[in-house]
Length: 324
Image: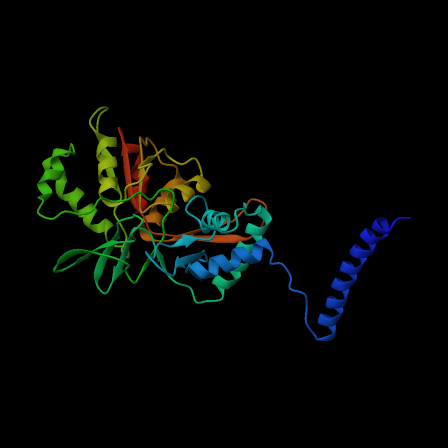
């Protein structure tokens, strides 16, 4: 057997033996071999470096950026949730896609961190601060319009927190010097009904009062849907400003929880359950639903909303006025 044949395995053996000797020395010295961080641990560390975590007064967990605009990111949800943000950050930092199980584990840890603190109110589009009214512009800057007795101003990073949903669209920057009479150039509203429209718009800026339900009726082609879309866009623009009448309570909670102004298009009749649900929505009462169809955990949906209805014949809706 040649010397070269013996030398190769012997060199490899010496290398392995040397590594074992180093490991024994570390153990004798009380040192542990450094372990590789899991993907879920890396995700948690990324999240904690970027966000402060808390829980809302309705039990929803969320994160607030430590720098920049204070636009709330919910831990659970669709494209507006922290899950997608964490996936992006993980890929940018590691060059790898985050495993789905690691994301789920990381979010569970972050929810525990968030729930350790005191509940914080989250607002949707409107809020009140020291007697003034705040209107969230809904853009990436996190700015609000602050409205008080002395006028209004656009302010960055307000001391209250606003959440966004997939139904939240941005308002344009306000411009002073306009006349409210210009509104009637875009709405087919009889002069005697115009004060009611203006009163509804002002009431909709107040977050802590019951709101009247605005009902827009008229013949086909009279501009009912156009008026409802325009009024929704003044306060709470949305990619879906008007929605079809909900078929059941689950569909109603989904539709109503996502935006401050809820417009229902072409309504012809209101079932008793929907009448009750609308009355609870405009007065601020809550509702209870299961979080998932697969478990028994309950979630409280407590919200106050502004409602716009439109239809050709609003007569069959009389029950809601009696209940309201």
